[in-house]
Image (cartoon, rainbow, N blue to C red; front, side, top):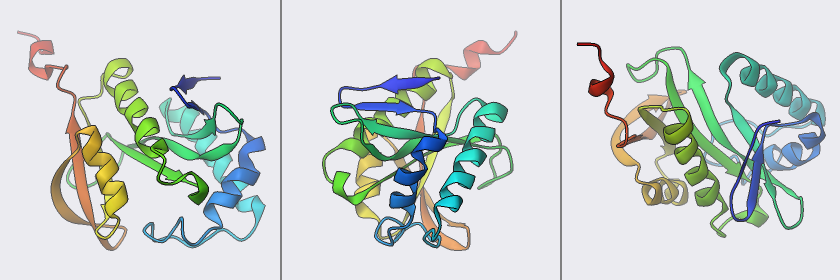
Length: 182
């Protein structure tokens, strides 16, 4: 199983045994306040989502991964990259950085720590030229996380029918033009 370790976190592919933690996360209306989706009502919905994520791992080699606190082994939420093969904001085959945590883990730097690990993985291992992220216009704490990582505000777009902030970060270590054949 693939995983990323940070000082305080283990970030790994979801397993069906994570369904209870995922249910706790996605059944909380405070967690989904800025997301624009309904809370889950049955643990079966969490199990089904894990199967979808596992399919994405197989098809894309990447996806949203479970975040586990090293010191306790507790499920904290998820963080990861999602590959959009369809056109989004006039771009195609682009990776989105996302994260979501159970409220008792908010305000402790876990989102920043996990997101930083993903930016490093995306640029150093996957050699992706840039990442994007979207935040609700009122979700200031999430936008602050992204700014700490070096994401820049690009524009406000319609995303799933809502106005959202579109942010991007470019892989400065990759010179795409130098790879072109002459």
